[in-house]
Length: 210
Image 1 (cartoon, rainbow, N blue to C red):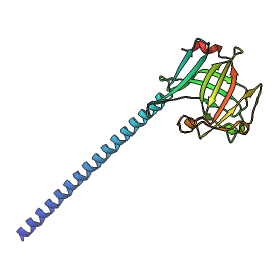
Image 2: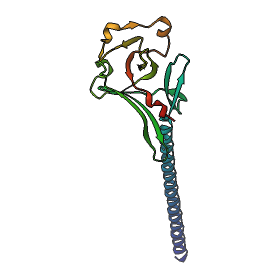
Image 3: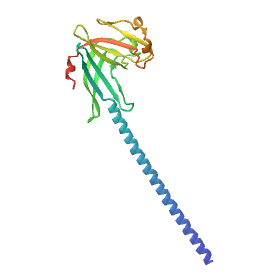
Image 4: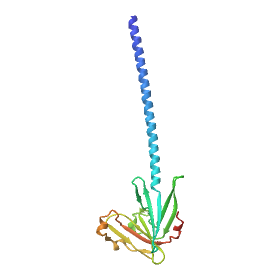
């Protein structure tokens, strides 16, 4: 009888110890999972911050002004994409305005500062946006004219057709009237252009760029 009671007590003690070990194991597992979750959250936050920093870096714009003997002036706007390690030209076209914006990123406040803005009152044709307020990215080139003014040309890289829209005082020709297929080398090139806009603007304040 006494032996049975001892066996029972021993079994109870063993069961209690087993449950205690299992409880400790569960607690350790819970702690491990919590630690993993915390590390994962920290890594996610770090990746998010890195992504934001990369996005800020990608928005950095380099401005270069080249002058030739013939007084030709070219304004080159480059957008450097860190991820793909390539340069992109930045231009914003608004449905009712053509705005050339050079962005300079303020790293301290993590926001863009508009360094220079050139604006004209030209009206692009419907080919530049399906709805009012549509924005498109274009390549910009600035060249001088015979009359002492400057001409800004916007190119859109797309398709095998180049649409040239020529400025006549305050009017544009219809794109359909001047559509033409690209030459054979251009048709095979990745640097194909679809739309070109030309307009005159005053670039005297470009000397303030630094």
